[in-house]
Length: 466
Image (cartoon, rainbow, N blue to C red):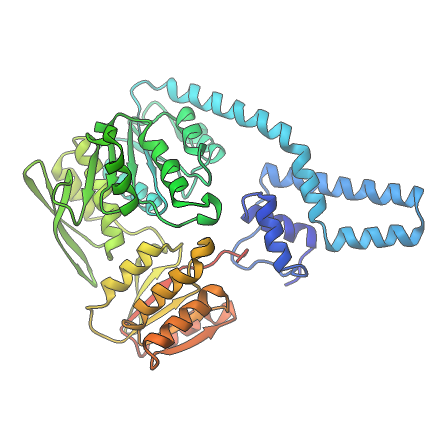
């Protein structure tokens, strides 16, 4: 379906976080794309409305002035250019609202910090990471809410305005614990968030190449994520010792020697997973903490889910939540939608991990599936925002996937999927590889595969701007 270029470009600009450089990069590769996005719709937020009104006003003013001072053919040409290529209008509108946004930003931070300060008994638990933070937040909320009244930031609300909105609408004196997700694309953003909502406890789930296009280097990513850890005392911080970048940062700085860690690999961790087992119906595992063993079982599937769950349980133990409360809460714990969510279609167990994808999670679930019996299929468009690492990372994943999956469906032709195909064919030439070009064919393809395969992994679902 074709839509007006202005609203279409505004939608893409919104998906790109209102970043002019990122939007311009998209436009240079889609100069005549006016197709309505099918996965999401334009959210008419106050900012989107302001940009739309200012763009229309600017276009009307330019056309009026050209009609008064220039010839009619020139006016018609300007009108056509502005209609089909409205991105200069959007850039100008962004420039016009910048002063207001700066004022509104500081006002929002001040008002929200005052609100938080008005609840002196409130425990704020901050969570960040390149991946796993939303699932960890959801798991921790589920466990804590069985212990006392808890609140979390909804969905992926992890920016100043998203967090502020959640606090203004939902935080009351009844809340004992507020679980806040802190997001960032550049250094300094999390530090700004911690000034607005100072955390008492903090969890760092992982550091990886996600959003490397924005952070530029993993060193920048590490420093950005540790801004949350630096906002609390070491005894109230919890980090994933299995993550190389986190572990390396801890080793370089003696100030982190009292920090709490969780791990599946290192016995020296504060919370060590001594054993775990995965089945199609769930998982079981044991955490060792202060010389005691804590056995648990859950309906969640996948090592990545277990890592996030162990982080949540570890924080509960730090907060002295009773063991019986944690065990009872686990019986009703479910994965977040589209995050390693298990579904049954015909004879196949479908692992729906389409919410997002990251390198560690992708390789982890492939390893989880490797020892399981049955014919396996993979459907994926690859992983986005890996910058210059796009091709080598997808080569690595492709070689790994080729040894596990009998059938691989690649969604769309891109540098990601072409790199996957090349690696798969060089590693295992007999693997069946096909491309899926139409979104409408996605679920019919899944249903067809489910008649002949035992396992189907759906890894990532690209947003409309990719």
